[in-house]
Length: 193
Image 1 (cartoon, one colour):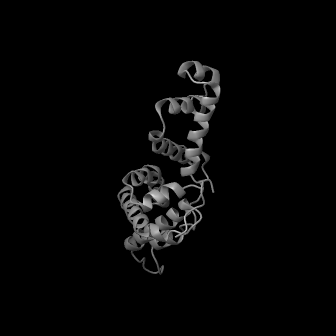
Image 2 (spheres, rainbow, N blue to C red):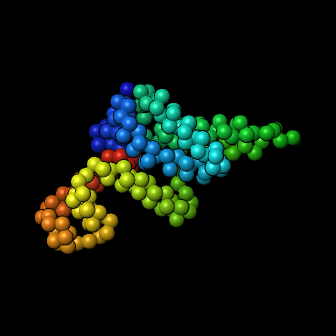
Image 3 (cartoon, rainbow, N blue to C red):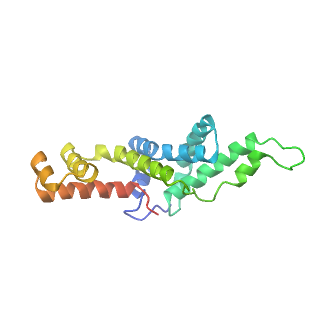
């Protein structure tokens, strides 16, 4: 079994998942289910089918995790999602007379090998922001209230270090360290490949 190198996206989360840690599975769901759902809708699945695919993807991750040997967790997740979407398209395929196929078969063949980046910069930004919000929710319980407030104040609200020092009763280096610790944790669970 080959997990990602230390410090890469999911090495910590994957080892927790492999130990069947329920909290790790909750984190995985909060972080990646909305992304898988988005991929499904973007590929043209109906909401009900997309929800079913999300469940099937989670079951596959659970059953195949011990065999995970890829460099990119999101890439692996996309491959599973693509295969599950293809199954849905095959089930829905109704041969069209005279065309030797169906619109669903055509759609299945059009699924890219990797998740496509949107041509619409606003849509891409929305997806990235949602993934970041999901990641923030996942890592939030890992930090004390003071550490979180320091991070949130400097990184999200763009407050000055001096203002946060006064507000939280922390030293300048403690505020910067809080930001660094949370950002490192975010980098650990988010892939940047």
